[in-house]
Length: 54
Length: 221
Length: 247
Image 1 (spheres, rainbow over the protein chains, first blue to last red):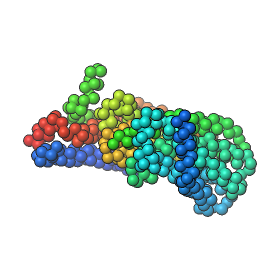
Image 2: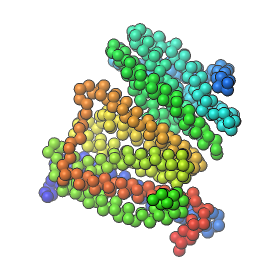
Image 3: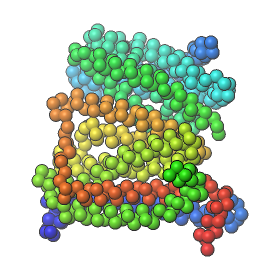
Image 4: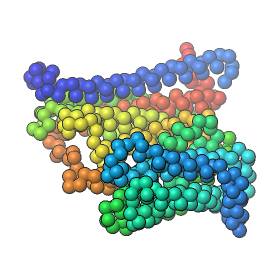
């Protein structure tokens, strides 16, 4: 298609890109937080197991 | 038999400690009197907002009063005794809600004629206002008690209560204030009245079970 | 099939099965989301009424749909927890609430961004928008209630009751808001009527819908897995898992 149309999106570029941008931020943030949680959980359980504290 | 004893107990407690009821009533009076001061003095516009304002004031007053509705009995261990007593906890809660409703709504209803003067309501509108309050506030108090039961063991429960209450009380607020607006426009109120009564009856029928369940869970710690 | 469901109620089997699904779910989510959004952004033809602004539909509709179906799923989990006392259901309820709230927020935000060029304002007290706002508030209430209880199992049960009260109240709220809205709107019943969607525009929508659904499932199962490990940490299978993981 027309690259110009892609960039300007018929004049609605700011709306569309802000919407998609917000969506990506929220989705990526959720992924990151969940992964972080998993790392912390495994870490805590590992340490507790080593100290035989489970 | 137990139900009537419970009613008597609640009436006695509130008669000896009227401060909760008095606080709620004063709050209602202050909110409904001071609200108009924050709005433009145009009396036409004020009349349009008045039903909504009064209903919001009632909601806040009941929210304030219901923070204490269960807390004292929970702290003293009375709720725990009820839960293990073998008597249906729901009935005791219904008795509590009934008494509190009566004691909170009476001062508010007594204040309504003064509100009618402040906001320039005619007699018809005043009567409809009183009717709407009588028919809609049981649902609101039931929901307030539900919200209070969520906060039983907690310290900062004001915010939690508001958060839970606001979505759930929306239908009652819409139909309650809508009814009064209809009366101001000299239109038929029967549909609103029917729905308001239905909501109150539904709340009264089902919420005590939910409240009892939550109390049992909170006690099971 | 019932055997499968019974097996799922056991924490150990639940963890093993769901963690096995995670890789596939994640891959599917990625593929659906990327292909769907690229198709929707660049290759679907522009709408004759709304021009290119309609492309926000590809994130708005999945978010709104998911916010509502996740709440339905939460109500189902609440029933499982309270009536059949299946503790895993309580876990799933808590995990779903977070992503459900984000979906509701996203639906509102993207809907608002879409509304500005279409209706000229960021917000309209339309029945559907207001209902979505109330749904977000309900989600927040459930999350706040869940967070307020120290004992996790107690928190699950209390959140379950609130979810059920909410699910019964939601149709009532929706209809009363609809009524309220038509009063204030007068003759114009709907400010925004959904246009009939043409096939070339529909397919990317289905893809992003599937993508969002797979993504939500992935996040929920991850969360549930983490929480399950913490709750069941004294069990032998958890110890074995950690030992294997720390090698």
